[in-house]
Length: 316
Length: 235
Image 1 (tube, rainbow over the protein chains, first blue to last red):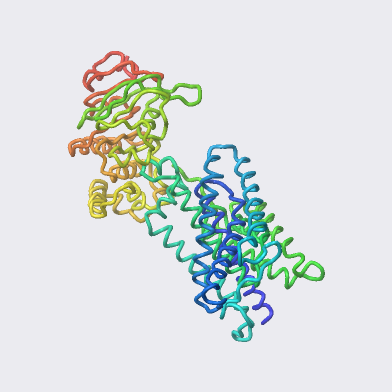
Image 2: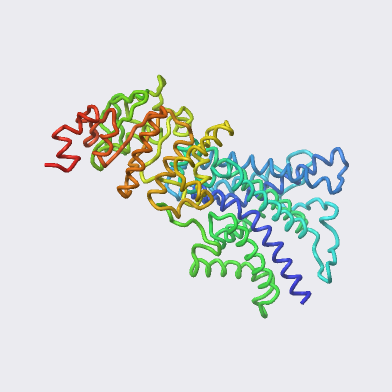
């Protein structure tokens, strides 16, 4: 039983990480019907932004790992990630707004390679920064790293507290933002009918930028979570995480924020359970990606609108 | 108030509007009549900035607006209630109305206007927390008009407000238009139902395949033989 709870918690925490990234895919898709396949790189950049912030802080603090580094690292990661996403939208995607769908897809691949190579080649060139050609240790912030905590017999990895807490806070923030602010209402309007939204006085270009920025901010949080959970980050981490998060977004129903959260958690738990309980050679970490994508295929075949359901065609 | 000069609008190589000119004076109700494909909707969409004209000019209150993006046109006091109502189906009635006031910064004025719309259409008040997509056509039309009013426009463009409505509901919409006019709102109306539109109109223009073929006061056109045959279904 303890082993089961252990794995369940592990799955939820992994799923929360996926969910934080998946929101970025789903929000952008909901507004412009674009799958931003470079979003995984925004997540990676967010982690490197947070690490950079910590290194710069270290010149003053002498490499302190006290808890108050964390909010500063989060802000630093978000700024870098949001900036990357906004520039990406402005210079790579906006010129292709009315192009055939294949064009932005190819562009996304180009942006991904560019961002990965940029980090790989230049991160270590900045004086005082570590070489990024291999994995870099992520700062071991007090409380969120270190020995697991025993909660009622279940050993909880400390990074899990951060990931799950972050998802709850971000989800609550998003709910408030989308449903209770004028900008959020405008985002919903644009996702339902862009032309009519313009007649309301909504600057659709600005709303698209907001969608990219919100997704990037959450991806940066996920980047920090990844660093705390695994203890290191590397320039390739965005690829598989991005693919998994995209899977999560589709599982839940792309375009639907709650769907991204449900899809992320589902995917994480299925992966953890498959790793722990699949018999023989089919279990274990080497097959977990197989089960994740088997789940995707099953959902696409039997419930293509996703678990929660995506956009409904209900225009009168 | 609104002046359209030699307007040409094309979709690719196909010209939908082929050089039309007309004016709307302050306080008037002006109708554009014509069959499907005559270019009425295209004309409205160009005035509100959703489409770019190929040539020609559009002037609103002394300023040229044919290069102004749609979201800035509404800020100048020109609202457009589009064809097919186009309410936001998954948002509540109240959210739909508030979106109509998106460009406004005066929260107090918005609250007043919200009450005004609710007073005008009591059903909207009763159902203000329901998703607009669950409404009947007539209710959606009230919502669409109410939403356009929320920007407090000086010129309101209504595209086919009577489409798909029962005669009773249609009466309701027409009397609303008259009420708006008496409040000082200028109205540019596109209608299939020529008889109802002409009764309201101070001035009307008949469009045929992208050109204005006839114009006059509402009364003149109601009495015109060609209009009676082509649009009022009389022989």
